[in-house]
Image (tube, rainbow, N blue to C red):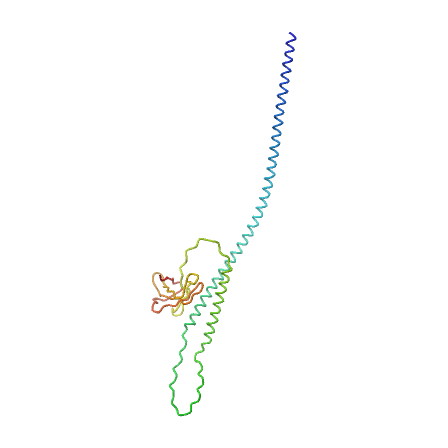
Length: 256
């Protein structure tokens, strides 16, 4: 073979080897760039993972704090409910006492007092007349007056205390108002002369207002308010309007 062929082959082989080295170097540079990019992404992911772990720890602590606050709120809510129940029971007992006092006051005020016997006719006598001694009272009304004063004082203290506790109580949360319950008779006086009704100043009661009492569809009597309290009123039965025996639970029908 000719020497030129050997030289050409060697040159071609050298060129191929050089091309291979260049390609390998290019590939190495691309791999190095890819490794750098992956390392940077790995570092970013580790940073994000660390941040997520920190946030998870913060959320865990916050959850513990919220759980503690929730427990405290539940305890306060239970205490508030207990206090509300106690206030409701005290208010119910106070209202019953107020009704009893109003009824007793009305009964004492309407209790007939014994009439004094007629004075004897004067006897004409020629004997010297001795100075007349003062006639002692036939009926001692002092106990009645003292009892009425005591009852009025008790009723005043009861109403003052109820008003003070009502002002101190926190306002309840806004709720949908329920339909108003019908008012009724809570106490009937002797011989159906008066009634105590659960209709007071807070409901719009006014003195001298006329109200009809009804049971079912039958009208029983007409009453006129004579004494107004915050939650109850005293009403006298108008003469000539009574059509049946009154009893607790008779409904109030307001005259338009």
